[in-house]
Length: 269
Image 1: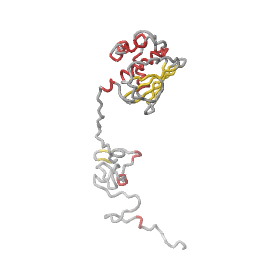
Image 2: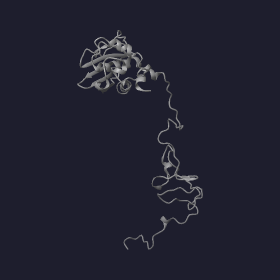
Image 3: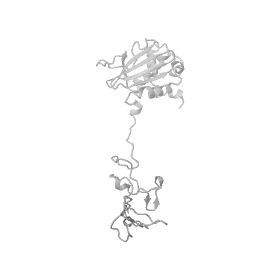
């Protein structure tokens, strides 16, 4: 869909009526952009304008309207508009500089504030005419208003979004949401294959030290039947690097018990 088709579609339906009510008051290009923000807030975000100024209090009489209030653009350097949404007050403040229009939207309750800086001279082609004549890139301007000015502050949804249903993403891996730490992983030596580890070392003994059992096998382990490797798939004795293992049958003399050659315990001879 091209820009002109989009601007004459349903999204901008109601713009002509709004602009007709303020056409006699519009005298500068920044007025057109403020009117577009107002249109977006009132039609697509369900806001209601409750007047001008920067008063941060909301009374019961502030019911709001979809129209721009009287004197909304009387100040040549600043805009101050007040809006309400579900009894929450928002302030739209605009500052006019030599070349730019700086807009801020403030949520009075949460104190969230957003800002956007735009160039009226480049975005607005005229101050009279239909929306295609006023802003040839109106759709792109609306997109910027949404992303940079409205969405960072307003936590609600626009009318287009609320018609959609959202579902929680399904877990595709079947992971336990209460599990702590990394997923369980097998040891380095697995039946029918070999899983490499950093530096080429297996995870021998790590399982005995991990109370959650996330590591590899314990000290009692077996090797698969592979050429050149002992065990032939049978469990091997415990691996204990700190000393000899006593009471293991069919084992030769313990080398720790053998005296060195010519050993004598008399150091003074």
